Image (tube, rainbow, N blue to C red; front, side, top):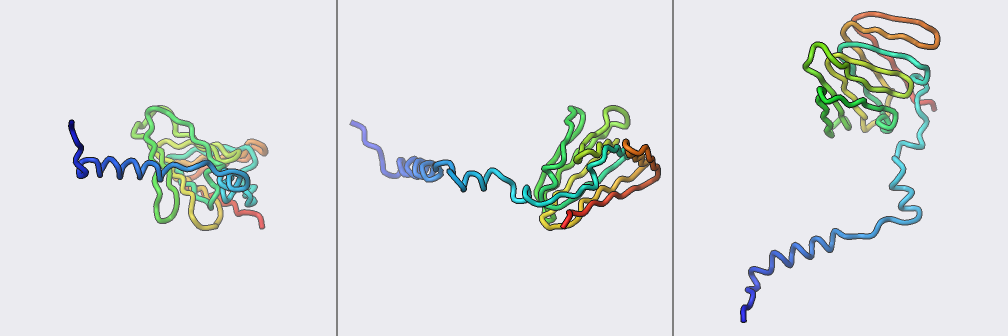
Length: 163
């Protein structure tokens, strides 16, 4: 007959206890609805980027209040590097490319299509404030509805939440 030492089975018992404590049931009713809806989903959103338009630049930095990432879509490409991290300012996503030629980095915020040669950074801040798009390096912007075009070394577009 072989007996187990209590010292050897203690780690196994603690592991089992920890796994059981981590188990729980899914929220139901109002709790499930509250956890499925982002906190910022009910807030009004800027109308600044509702008109079909396009923006091309070397680098683009997009920042906005909670709820921003619900309005931004990234197009993935195997040659691009994607990173995401939480910072003191908020949730930062960055896509970059070292290639001088090739597929542009593309994202979309509402109806504004954005393309960049080198890098796009998207920061969803933890605090309220306007949505800001800052583009630099041989910037081209076109409103596809009116046909208005603009070119320059930099461009900033700003949209505030309606009150």
